[in-house]
Image (tube, rainbow, N blue to C red; front, side):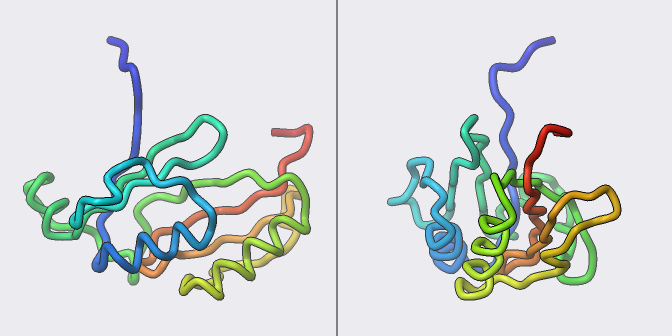
Length: 134
């Protein structure tokens, strides 16, 4: 079996807040900017798409409950940074845009410079300084 594309769908409480947060971080809107119940962004050079829907819409599609990202974790996306300064800059931008820093920035046990942050809904992202090991 082969698929032509993969993307992520995440639940949020406030679409406008989500749009504002990811636009402040500089991510490109993936169309749908005129639709009220979805925020869709492209991440990275390969333009991985993450769609953000209201929690009740995701719950309806899954025919079940949505995990609480405030009390637990669902998935962590990793974002590549070219250097430590870029990681530090992103960390500052995350805080000023309404997100929170979960860990770092710091050098982890594998020698990577990392920073884990959460968006306003608690979705986790790992900023990693990329080097020849990746």
